[in-house]
Image (tube, rainbow, N blue to C red; front, top):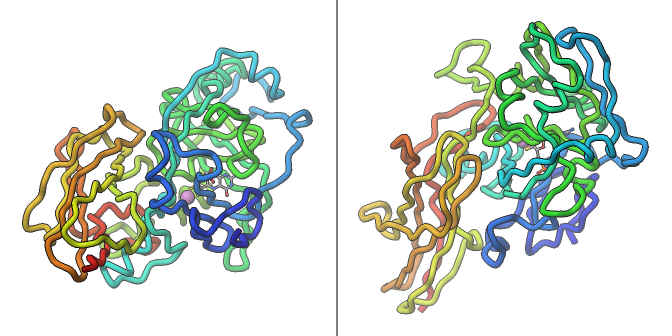
Length: 363
Ligand code: MTE
Ligand code: MO
């Protein structure tokens, strides 16, 4: 197992690539899994280290001037006794694919140089945040809801930014957000937020705060480093203060192959992969093995759903030995297709361009 600072679960090198305190799933390891990413294969993105939290002593405090009274505390048993809801949703880092800004576009960006493995889909089970807010006495003037993690303060460039926290607009908080205590039928594992995490379907992973300890409900808009200097788009195409805070994830596709991959010439190979988006359902996936000159449709194996992924496959019979590139591109229900190039931003978020997957065809 490869060493990673502060991650509890084993990270075998054939299944994960470790980047400092983070570990991304290798797409080659997803080929043999079903729709949901198994918990032991799910990527981990930690600002600091996975904390040890006693579920029996854990409390969630909901507080702030957007409540009628409060604060109100909840224990784990109390949350489990409330009506449960499930969601088959991805958690995906806003920086997933960041490494391709550099390797494919020659651009310098800051942050973890992920390939495409900072995503997983799980069956999350928990209680709707809307229900907890209602029980806490949500008032008529609430506008923002800010969950905060119990992990350590995040120190970046010598500046203590405090504990991970990121406001959600009330409308999203009341829509499809869960306080999840189960992941794929098991209690939430330590690395994924035990005992309770926020699950914000379709949105950038930072919104899905792990190890949640308190939630501020505010009658004023809230700001934290995670919706001001971070998780906005900065660069020549954006205003000085950056874009609006990032919300929905962008359209992406990945092959379930080693990077790079190798195939013998003259045989037919079943290529498999997955496509997803937070902005709308995937409608169509196409693959190209000749640099984008011709595109052939891939077969979709799942009913496309928003906030989740669809598995697909396509056959390929390489006819000549040598280097090649495999391309996959998805189109969503709004008619958006993955572009050839992603628009630059300094922190390398939302890389949505077609990834050129390197392959060697052997004789
Ligand atoms: N929540 C806390 N408390 N601390 C963190 O470091 N990382 C965020 C988010 N929630 C983080 C957090 C980021 S940037 C991402 S992408 C997701 O958790 C990753 O979730 P996972 O580790 O379960 O895959
Ligand atoms: Mo992230």
